[in-house]
Length: 238
Length: 238
Image (cartoon, rainbow over all chains, first blue to last red; front, side, top):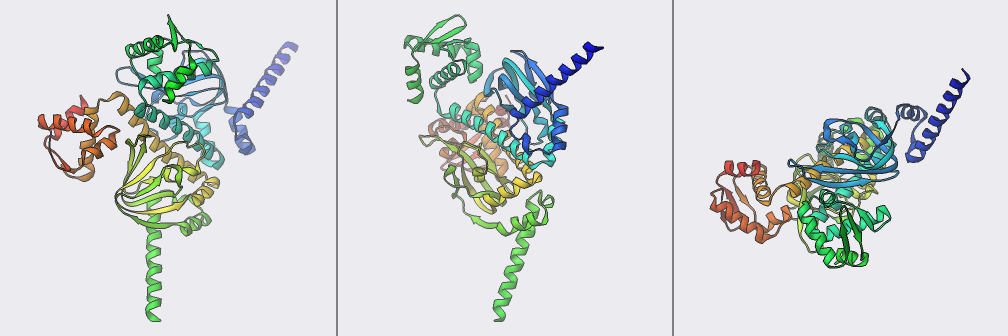
């Protein structure tokens, strides 16, 4: 009997702690009224998702908003023939809106969300968020800002695709990866770089070999080591 | 004296009529309270803008939301070297949100809006809209739907750029123009087609000559006539 109570208490403490945490991760918590806070709190789902999981697969499901405590997600689109291009990535404290795209009638596209690194997150079920958003100007305006932020990512992507040559895009991608990972030794296959940039493996292989000949990277199976970051960076800025 | 009063009366009637009209064009008018309706009504600016005018030039200004009574606008982005690509177009009853992009902190891109056909529109000044949106969940949610709709346009564009070859994109553009204009005789320069599609004039010229050889269009100075719409359409669907 005693142990059960202790378990319940510790479970309660744990949940209490998680909710406390959640408030820190949800920037407009203080703009919700008590009823809204309780509704949100009561609906939260905590999840640890493993690298490689597909969280949201097009319009097939409508998981809800994902609030990332720690981890890394990648949103990408897929062609009929299975080609991919990354449209944006999400990191600690980011909120993923398009995993709840069913909330917005006017969203007529499909993104797939893949877990790039083991991720701790909260799910806010779409119905809960939508019902709060419908009444709360603060939540609706916050959602606007979230969408505007992803919109900016996507417009940046169009500019890259349209006006930047692939060598500059590959160079920028390698430097970005090095910055995310905090190391110059990148565990990346040519296939995965192609999938990020919407290119083909063969094209990326040719480009990386050119970079290697120029002394900017050194290649080995499954890794790319940046050996001259300054030269890569100059290539981007040319 | 009499004529002045008559003038004032007719001016009043005209403004009354325009406001009546505006309500028809602003889908959530009925969801505003009387104070909000009055504030919006008092701030409206009516404009007739001529073909070729640039309404919103990047982040240089923040005109406000544009509610199109009749006409046609084009939103495009511009490269450092002056290349263009159309990101979406707006027609009768559409509302242009990005001419008020200063309202949203998270918008970090610049679109230029060009009047493609003489346009009658209302301007809702950004400050007015923003102050109403801040308090009104209905307006904020409506803004969300507007943005989601433009987001869908832009995601469609990425898919086109990434996965469709240029011949299909030119064919689809010509068919879309024919549908908008209601005629197969299109007044289009090769330059303007290039600017819509983010391509180069020379490339478009080569493509159109190929289409002409295949019997799909006939070309003359400043015009493209579609001579085999079915064949163009088959090319798009291939």
